[in-house]
Length: 211
Image (cartoon, rainbow, N blue to C red; front, side, top):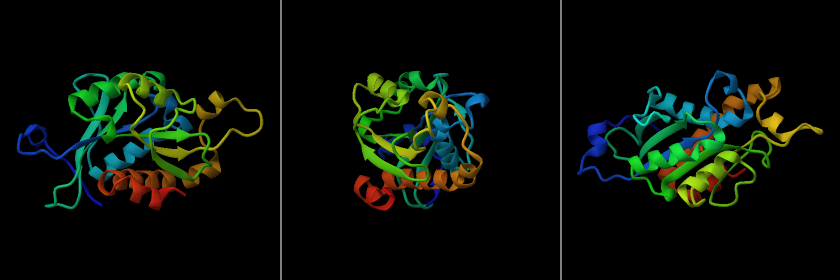
């Protein structure tokens, strides 16, 4: 599947009525958080941006970095996608998400949150729409700002902490050396799931990716 950039002119054109999807990679900004389990959402949208061949740039709101693009083969119009990484910390990410959803006129049903999930084993994933926050501060903030939790989630498994390790310490720590060998494949698969979700729909994506 090929992701192509779309121009601001194309996005604002009245003739181009293709719906826009907002894909939110949840994480914490800054290099000190970059390799943490809690930042796997950032890794997935980074992979999608790399497939687009475009870097993230600052949105004029100043509260997020974005990449704008289009899914589908060249010459075949497909879903338009905005990849997003908030510049705020995880527990305040809902505000920037709401701001960009308003700017791009994206309803909750076309928002995809990509995030870490404690209750799913590492190297597995689930795709769903709606549901609880399960203690995830990023999801809680999005729900509060959007006024609903009925958006899609690509839940990337990180598993539970070993022994008695504190959950907060676990999610804000780096992957183990053995996990780091597998992580690129997990990120690549999650990026594939995002593409499938916006092009093929929820049911087909769940059949293909809910391991």
